[in-house]
Amino acid sequence: MKIKLFLLSIMTIVLLISSSFKIGTIGYKPGDKALDFHLKNVDGNMISLHDDNFKDAKGFIIVFTCNHCPFSKAYENRIITLNEKYASVGYPVIAINPNDVEVSPDDSYDLMIERAKEKQFTFPYLYDESQEIAKAYGAAHTPHVFVIQKEGKEMIVKYVGAIDDNTDNPEAATKHYVNDAVSALLAGKPVSIPFTKAIGCTIKWKKS
Amino acid sequence: MKILNLILFLLFFNSSFAQKAPIIKFKDLQEIMHRKTDTTYVINFWATWCDPCIRELPSFLQLEKEMTDKKVKFHFVSFDFVRDYDAQFLPFLEKQSMHNYVYLLDEPDYNSWIDKINPHWLGSIPTTIIISHRPDTTYFNEGELTYDALSKILNPLTH
Image 1 (cartoon, rainbow over the protein chains, first blue to last red):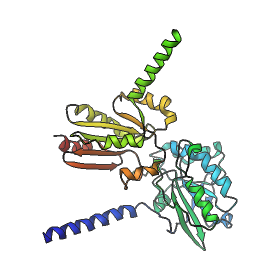
Image 2 (cartoon, rainbow over the protein chains, first blue to last red):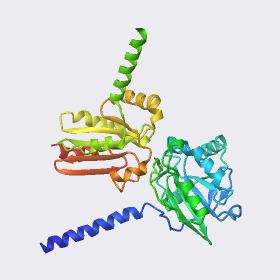
Image 3 (tube, chains in turn cyan, red):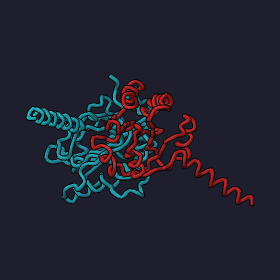
Image 4 (cartoon, chains in turn green, blue):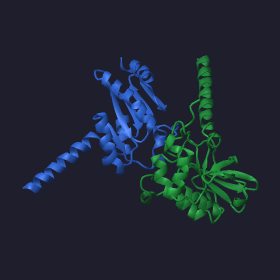
């Protein structure tokens, strides 16, 4: 009986460890330090969070997105609106396409340039060709948002997840997660919903 | 009279389509998932726009065909947008000859229900859940499944 109990507790511990491991691999959680990057924009320039252009930024709305995914497309206008609303008050949008061009030819750098022109993006649209930034952040889907705040020299993750609770119909959305998070940060308040699951297309990882 | 015929025709036409691939809510999905019978249920979450889902679909349809005499039922629950129902969803089903147990899940607030299915689910599709009550097992797989992998899971549950 004792042995059985002992085995059971060992099994429970193993199970707990393995499940926390799984969660650990998902990526940044609110409170984590975010990595800066150096990625190519659609205009050919390299962009990083410590650029002079961003010296007045209080933080960033980083959106992993892409050209082809219907969920990304459904959110494009809302991403443009986020930048219109928050860039001037210190939270510019930075969009990043992490998809591998071999697996998803529609997400090539050339087609990113085309898409940015077509939709008249007012924010950088960067190409994470090595996929290292998407991996470091733990982006799983497109679109997947990370709201970060500058604290001294550090970039601290304040919100991870979806843009709102209705991909199909913006008018029917009742929870505007990113809006609420940035508004709270601007008001110096804690973010009330700091984590949601971002549903969308899986990031197209390189085939090793 | 002509108008009445037309109305009747439209009513019949719509309802027959609705039966083929109904738009369902989360509570309907829960009903499907929690049927306590001796049948094994394969519940596949997919969408017409999801490439890996479309890649694995033939294996599922093939196994469904091969297992018609077994106590196993396949359910295909789509994440397609409701607005694409007529123009994209139904034509796809027609093309693939998918006539049974196909649904469009109209629950855009994913965060309100996805953890209730499995807290480890990141929300990717394809995702497949296999529920069997004899013995009581639930199998959860986020990502693509091959024919071999799926039949390996199903064979012991349906013999």
